[in-house]
Length: 140
Image (cartoon, rainbow, N blue to C red; front, side, top):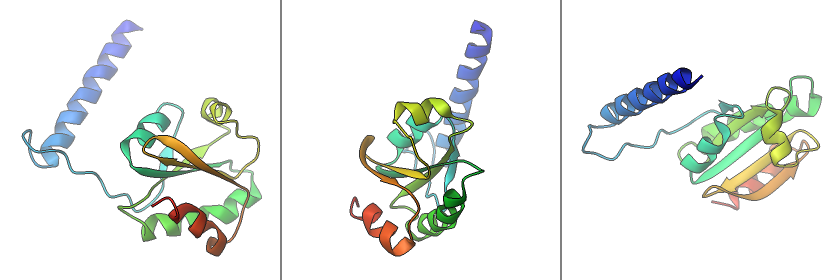
C-alpha cells in the first residue's frame, strides 16, 4: 500500500513538472487552464478542483435523474459562455457518495457554487437558463 502511494506521489509530481514546462518553463508561473466545458469530478478530485479555481459551479447529478438531463445541456452552454470566468464540474452522486453526503445533498440536480474555495450558494432542482444564469453570475 505504501509503495502504491509513493508511486502515485511520483506520478503526480512528474505531471506537475510537465504541466509547468508546458505552461512556460520552470521559472514562470503556470497559466491557468481555460475550461470551456464541465470537468468530470469524483470524490478524490473534488476538493482540489474547488480550491484551484476562483469561481466554481459543480453539478451533482445521476444518470437516472430526468431533471438532471434537463440541466446538463444548460451547464454545458454556461461552461462555454463563461470559459475563463467560471469553472464548471459534474459529480455523479451514485459513484461519489462521500462528497454528496459531505455537502448534505438530498435532492438532485443540485448545483454547488464555490467562491475562493468556500461554498457560497446552492441551487436545488431543474430550472431554465434564464432563471439559473443570474443565480450563478451574481457571484462573479
